[in-house]
Image (cartoon, rainbow, N blue to C red; front, side, top):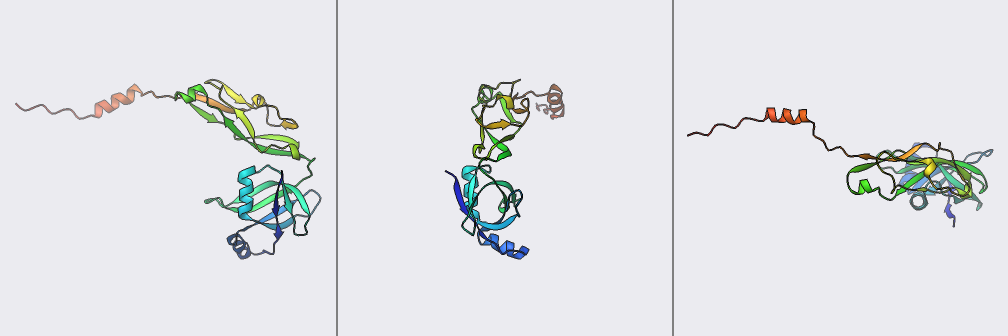
Length: 207
């Protein structure tokens, strides 16, 4: 079921008005659609944050406009405050459910390689997203990747990801997503010798 967020008209123009809007619990948004003029509105910040946390940035939602009409849309971009990551502005892209969309979808790695579980190796997440293309109503909010079989010297690549109906991977198939590297717990002999040389000599015992 697609979530619905109710947008309202905005009258904010100056920086001071935008600041007061945010303090009141709302965030300014823009809604874009090819061939149409960009519409500027505002949404309740807590409701928008809840949607993003529960469904992800790339999920479809219905925006209910002030005139009662609804637009299907996805989040195109977010602007956040750098320290506390509070939402400052969100741009939506209005779409038809059958529109072809290109997006970077987050990866969710699951499973644990045996060497990592035994604390002799560490995982390396090389990429966190992959680029895909699909109809809007087929766009996944994440892509699962099982890494439990990856061992040292191997890599999980885009071509190893499970096929998803209606979704085309645009990131090249040989792109590395995840690897495992051995831990190195060696102490260099030269360092050990230097430490020993700097140690104070024991004073001779008095008779």
